[in-house]
Amino acid sequence: MKDTGKNISQEELWAGIQKMSEDLGFADCGCARVVPLSGSREEGRYLEAGQMGHFGKMEYLKRNVDKRMDPTLLLEGAKSVIVFLAPFGGESLVTDDGLKISTYAVGEDYHKVIKDKLYRIVSFIEESCGQKKICRVFTDSAPVMERSWAVRAGLGFIGKNNFLISPKAGVKNFLGVIITAAELPYSDKTAENACGQCTRCLDACTRKALYAPFRIDASKCLSYKTIEEPLDDTEEADNGRTETFSQKWIFGCDDCADACPWNRFNKPGWREFSSNREFLRSCNREFWNSISEEQFQDLFKDTPLLRPGLAKIRKNISR
Ligand code: SF4
Ligand code: SF4
Image 1 (cartoon, rainbow, N blue to C red):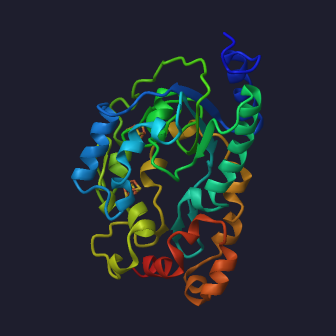
Image 2 (image 1 turned 135 degrees about the vertical axis):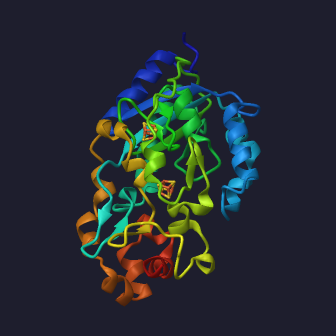
């Protein structure tokens, strides 16, 4: 069917996108037809989480729900959501004195790394269709239900730990999204949840933030508490802490992700996502407590560690 505006069919366009995705190192990609998510089970779960106070103080999650549920409010005429899996693989980082940093934070800021690659695919789509401004790119930076679209694009299922689980590429993948007005061939096949009787992720969450399958109370979750929670609310002595005393999360938490048996399908992480690993291994308590704000900004510019900032990291160490 020649309906992409230029002499290229939907199938040819999609084949080109898949080829570029592979060449750029994405572990998989899929496309879903744009439909409003309002009234869907995904919207129901989202609204319920907000009503139950599970967003903590992340007020931005409560805003723009209409846009979150309807891609046509983010891009006029949106027809397709294309989701890409960017593997970050690897293990959580443990410093020589037991401070732990989430796997995804030991390299460059993933937003920029992924967007740079997605813009190249956007150029290809727009050139192929002979039209400009028919795409928008998102990586965890705007109200988009990335995981819901990934499932609808046939990339995998949502595990009880709330991660997208890809039978092809495991658990540790960032999701990059292109919303486009170009139409593509959709398979409309989605995978059923394949957790079965497994409860490893629930058992691994010692804080019981993951308190039931698919239910996370962010206000108790270490990923929220060590990164997003406002500094003034960070407890100096967190008596509810049940991490082992020899090791302590100071940025994020991978316990419910690491517990998942689907990790055996993880692809090797992109080099950019582990570029600081060796250096960070040596960043012990003494390091964090002695560097100046200026040094911190210089050493960690364009990395995820800038988000909590030095003062918050220090407070996380003293919890
Ligand atoms: S990230 Fe850690 S604290 Fe949060 S739900 Fe998972 S295991 Fe629990
Ligand atoms: S650990 Fe088990 S229950 Fe949890 S997401 Fe993985 S397979 Fe599902």
